[in-house]
Image 1 (tube, one colour):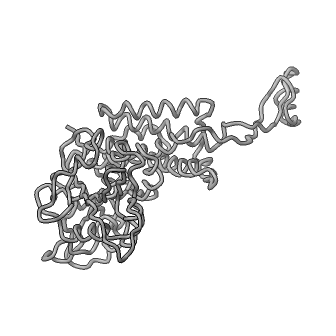
Image 2 (cartoon, one colour; image 1 turned 90 degrees about the horizontal axis):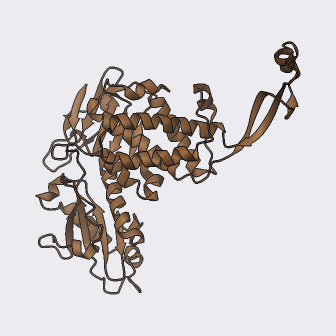
Image 3 (tube, rainbow, N blue to C red; image 1 turned 180 degrees about the vertical axis):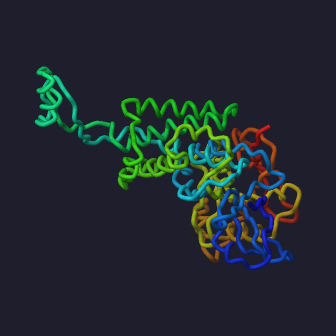
Length: 409
């Protein structure tokens, strides 16, 4: 097994075995560095071939990340549910990889994603389910052969064996989801025991189970393969997809929820995108609809636009801890400078009558970068203008704001 940290170099010679990997790519990250297979902003575990695996963990300087808190903050907005699946990939059909340091990452990630999607379901989908039961009175059609075997021969003349359809919420889709919720509760209680954010998770699970109270969790492996996603019911489609992943990760065995071997399902998690969604969760809580996420302009998509009656700004997250003590890279300055001259972006910010030949307003540009110093939401209760105090030297209207990555102490 090969163990790396983010930005480590695996190999400086071309290797066909490494070309298909998502955790490393052929690159030269900094001018003057040799070309090679570098771990980028992704962590996870991946098979190189049938015999060897690679594991990439978080970089030094950002260690002991409280992933549960990050995920919970991400899911404070509906936006994350629509695009969170882009942040990670998981290969449930491949053998597990021994990576104890990553066990507390992928399971809470998939489970909280699943629970957050299910939590958006307001009312249960219903459908017709076929039942065959021994009843006291006729319901539906009498099953002649079964009635003779069960009742006539045994002289139980007060019973009639019937087959009937019933319109109910106890359909296979809901059973699958409920079973996955029960699995999720067992798994996350073990992995995150003692985490202060577990109270919020348990409240969410309790609310979901109360909605599914009338639904059975009796689902077989065979039934799961037959359950289809529903394009019309978007929440159900995503919930079913994630429920299958949760159950398959643990091979439908609740005992595997307490597995202590340190094995994880192969996965790749993009830390840069995770940090972007984490910051968005904080901004959404603090500023609500004043924040526009990834508006598409002529020069690209800035992470966030902030637009209030008194202040407008362009914000971009960079998962680059070195900005806490090193100057901004030139390409970052050029990127945001382009956004601040982008006419569609300026119009979206509320600058009226913007034309190519008219004077361009000076728009504040804000770089948001991580540090390892857990604390409250830095945006909550403060107007953005008050936070734009750390200016970038020798640049006009450029500011830096550090948003800590939560850590376990």
